[in-house]
Length: 397
Image (cartoon, rainbow, N blue to C red; front, top):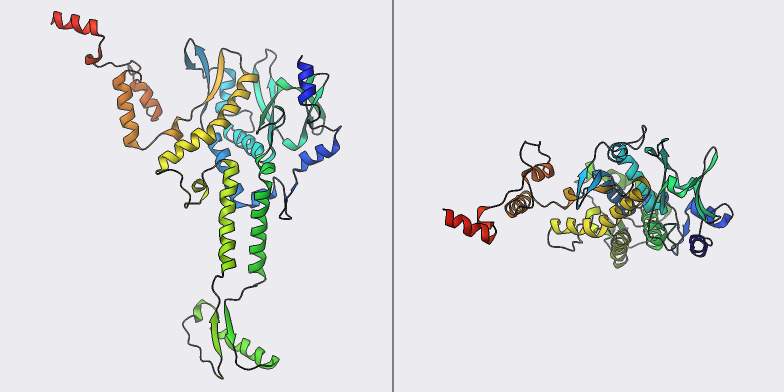
């Protein structure tokens, strides 16, 4: 049954050396656009909006604490002594920190659609290290009903699917992910073309700032003499000097035309278009003109809920599927990003403490304060006792 499912949905779409055209396209990541610009994961980072979105998403995911928990009935307990805790929270290997590992993985998923890490296990099956593999050196194929990952490094090595962490973008076949760059190639290509056009315009000085008008036709010698004479008024140091014109000569300055305004508007639209593909609020990448909510706190909550949360859940699912048994699991702590200002936080803490579902230890932990003894007990106001207990207390008193 599994082999039939894999052959139906994966066999024709998978990347492998047996399909050179698909393999070359995956490796190079080059996409042609209507604007006549080739878009690849590398040159797309020359677009400031793409670079800002990639940095925002990858660094936001990498900066969140990642803990390992043990299921204890309906609750959970943090387990720092688990072998995988230090790998996910601190350093997956001796050469890389957890922040860099996660930042690299998310950036590769955004730019190339897929990110891979080899799982090194000990003799007892416990995880010893996580080694990132370059996305361009890994191919995926189905062989005899098995999903295999082949790393084309100095030595060609093939691994079973449970030995490789595979983080992916949106997928049509459930195996290979689609990159944001490939989906947004037209908008990114247009933005790059606009940058190239603007750069060449200024480089070639296609639009001069000042035009000198003469009522008569002048010869080459007079024109050269006039240019030499005007040089003494160029530069900031000479900006206050007065210019005397003779023989009916006049100055005319060139301002922004309707075409210039449309060019600036199109550049602004490109920023919004690319942000839409990355699901990033434009103001978070330097565009303060686009605010969807009334406050920055509401904007941050929307960013955490609708943009970051799907990435966090996808990463957690892959980690829990291949690194843990059912008794343990990994989970991001996104409470820091979702917190409001100090007044709002303290008000919510007070309600939680008064309602009896938060402890002082919980509050101090979220505020990064040192732990105090006897603060992990739930408090309950006396006027919130059950009706029977309250009546008995009234009789006794």
